[in-house]
Length: 410
Image 1 (tube, helix red, strand yellow):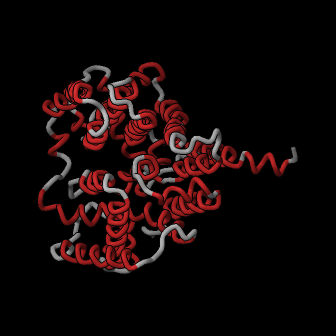
Image 2 (image 1 turned 60 degrees about the horizontal axis):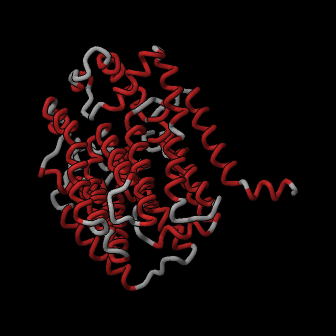
Image 3 (image 1 turned 60 degrees about the vertical axis):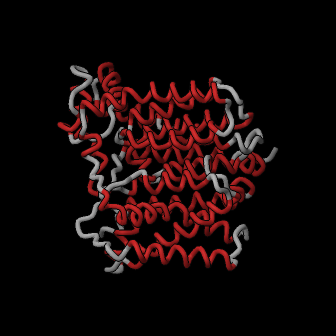
């Protein structure tokens, strides 16, 4: 076998390993986000890791933290053995590969080929999401929660293959890992709605009742911890007055990941610009216009990258509002393609019901959810054509390079 054939048959693995190596390289140069936010979070919360060794119920708000504490509890055990923040970060960075690996394993359930190079390329995209890199390098709880969440999805996909009508170990493990994600960042609790609905449609009544009891039991630690530390809820800046802000901001942030998927499908002729698409566009435009009438983003902590582009490059909100219109247009498309998608759409839009939402919250969460849980033909081109997966990977690399250059902020 010549070198060219070896390369073509292993291109996915080569790209995956190279992508992982770039993450490790970035660790050694202490790569960080804009304003050194990731390193700042690590330094601010490291005393909380130490305090947990003395009292597991210590108030996280004292350390500027408003998340459930499992990630920090885990690190406190590691710190007890290692006692070196740099080594802890290195261990965390190296083990963050678990996330793209389980994403790949989840993808393979719908693509049973023994080794699909396209799927490996697709999973390599995760390495180039800026939030994944920064939070891996600086041992952030975002990564821990996403690892638990992705393993949860893996067990759900494993159940979905046969769709057992009785409670089995795959369902139990899926719920346990989703609970662990919730113990790490409380907002993952909203995904219980989706999974319980999916199980309700398939499993028998007795099994569903038992499953609901398990869910209730797994929720007790979070409820108890929230009762002891109510700032986990009150510190999230939630308000009914924020509804137009998060409806615009969350959808705009999602557009950053949805845009390349739609463009690549258009390039390969998987989406036709028929009259229906323009009807969705008109409906979305009217909706966005109505909720933007009372939109005044002064001192607003939301909107993500597109809001910054709109403000700094264009000095208005027009581009930002257009990105929101784009997302709602294709959310309508996804809903009409498969009605079950509406649950995920509503979760993604409403899960950050707050004046304070950041781009990193959806990164790479939307990517994971779209390719594993959404039921849509828009995913097919990426598993069928290497060129499509490579185009998406290229987009992620360009996005990452722009992010580390701080082009928007300069």
